[in-house]
Length: 103
Image (cartoon, rainbow, N blue to C red; front, side, top):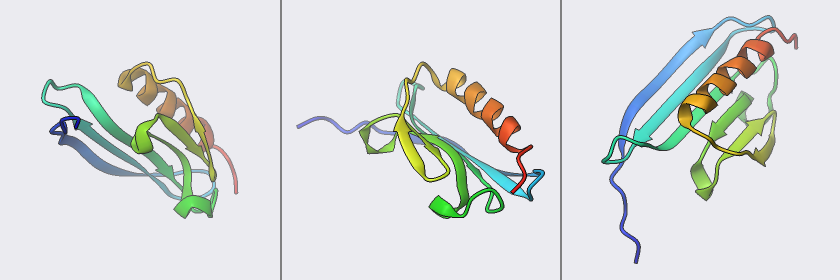
């Protein structure tokens, strides 16, 4: 039986932002293991003016369900995870582009 890792939530933030289509939010959650390594994460951009599917989640990345995957307007696809820092840069770049979209 595998040992369960103890995880500690180190970031849990929600930030509002303006978009061309209407207001949105970014949610960032990070859990670290005992060694301080990112073990679990959830990055989400929600804007109900850009999509109503998936509770308004326009874009999201997480590693729940045992694999790294990307949510985009209701579709889910796996992606190659390099590091959390690389992923965060990618996510923020995609959000900058999406914020300019009109509904």
